[in-house]
Image 1: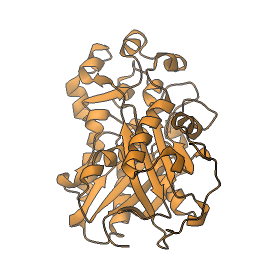
Image 2: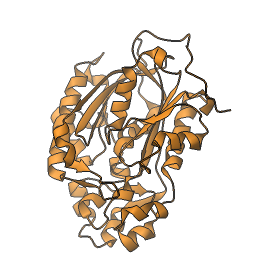
Image 3: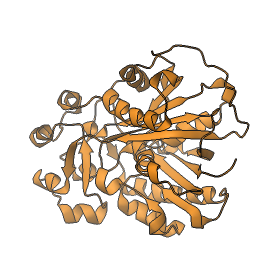
Image 4: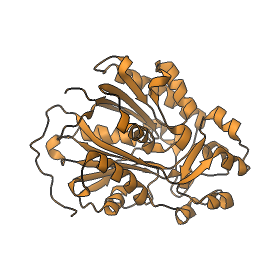
Amino acid sequence: MPHSQPFKTSRHTPLTGDLFLHGIGHFHPENRIDNAFLAALDIGTDDAWIMERVGIRSRRTVLALDYIVRTKNEHPSESARWSVHTNAETGARAARMAMARAGIEPSQVGLVIAGGCSPQYSIPAEACLVAAELGISAPAYDITSACSSFAVQMHHLRGMRPEALPDYVLVVNVENTTRTVNYADRRSAVLWGDGSAAAVVSARIPAPVRIRHSLVHTDPTGWNKVVIPAGGHFIQEGPAVQGFAIRKTVATVHELVARLAGDRSNMWFIGHQANLMMLNTVCQRAEIDASRHWFNVDEFGNCGAAGAPGVLSQHWDTLPPRCEIALVVVGSGLTWGGLLIDVGRAS
């Protein structure tokens, strides 16, 4: 049964300050937008144009495809009516995978945190919607920083005293941002895809995978570079934002590399899944070998805050032993952050 117990003291409380990652999950909706679909919208784009600029072949959407064809989502306020899934449903799909991998039941979750770029309601918190969908009765609230939400959430939890947290925290990033896309604008239509990611973490109960370092930075003077106005379409200053994302991602990789327990030969990289051309430039400048670069943006598009953790989820069952993963994300605000994830090493 769902519970509403206060946080309980655990006899497993570690003294390392690490945040242990017990399970992670992802979900992408069924409806697929490939480059041929976008070309058929007659918005001045085709497969060659898209691949040259962003390297994305396909994306997923919660929107009905005939709705996009008929309206190009001219009025985003109508998009919820033409969605095949709610945010609560897609978030819960990812969460169930994360909990199954962690080996826990919803009744064991003592706190739910959510975030992302595109909550379905201004209020209540998205975390409350996902918790209700899962039958979880526990504190639920949002910690959101657009595409950088996952790093911000983990950094926040790492900074809390273990005794202030329950045994298990469920973190869910729900991104159905295609509801805000103007499909008459080829610059944004080619980028976005929908997806959700979830993680079960604990500051008390050890696991083989742990987040042992995190960092977050913000430059609030750039708040207006990437925005989704209330009830409006996604807009950004594309070239400026891409240059910013590349510079800050490379710098953050260097910050994380300085914290490696081993050497770079056993490090993998996951970046913000904005577009493949941006990620390839980062790898070149940060001297990351292509074989150590994990991504899924080519198949799923920019899934916002769910992108990078979604990539980690896809590799969860085949994580190399005794490796380290540098996960770096960038988001509006402008905010960027990084996580150093350690797999299978001793504390």
